[in-house]
Image 1 (cartoon, helix red, strand yellow):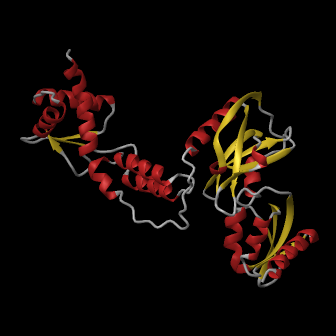
Image 2 (image 1 turned 30 degrees about the vertical axis):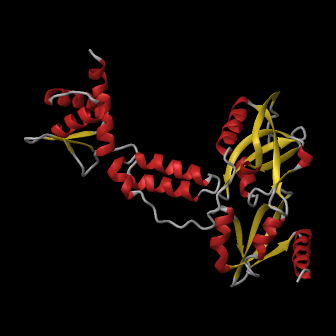
Image 3 (image 1 turned 45 degrees about the horizontal axis):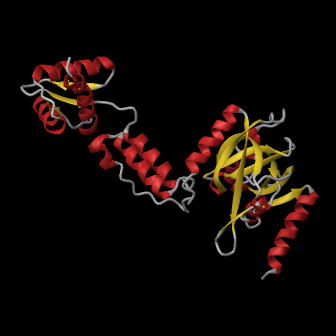
Length: 325
């Protein structure tokens, strides 16, 4: 068998995948012409029919409509158009994906729908706060961290912040952080590395897009996670991955903010009736400025009742903000 005969079924599959769908067909004559013009492969009606039967046996969902000119089309794909639209929306709205990479991914995702389906995938969605990361190495960083987790190795990396001139400035005086990565977490539309530092005594979070360069996987074995460490609980008690001392806090909430309490803490959050217009919520949270700003955002509809030192710390933060006015 010559190479053209071997390649012909593969090119047929490519043509049908790209140029047909549930409502668009190609006839035998059209398939023969495309094979000749695009790939310089000669064919005839019987070889087209035999090759398509071979592709159907292979598992491709190809429909044959018999007539004087038999027509063929791909009936189903791995993803339908609605699923691809959802994937595109997720890619375009994700802050963690750089803008140019988003465009590349959208083109690749659209190609899964074929030429006709791709036109339906032009999206008209406005994504709130769609500020994309400028870290072009983010996928390499994610892959490296994931490899270190799988191999139970420590990693070292530099970490940066922006100074008042919007310049990148290395934290820790440029010294490398060395941690045992435990998990990659997508939270608040950003990727974070959750890991152990200081011989496992400290659980830390680092934003992936603030890692300078690519982390180095060290030969040193990683440390085991604490026995009582639950990454899901850690995420649920941490606001935007700002870790801090975790405390049980009692909140007094107006009845009309129950949706917000459930959105933040889940349906299993402990609540009790307080009076006719409010309820109590018992939550475990990292008491950082992020949590306090979340409380403040309700403009008095959520109040901290206990413990007293958390109330005092919140009051100090509010007073400090007032003093600057």
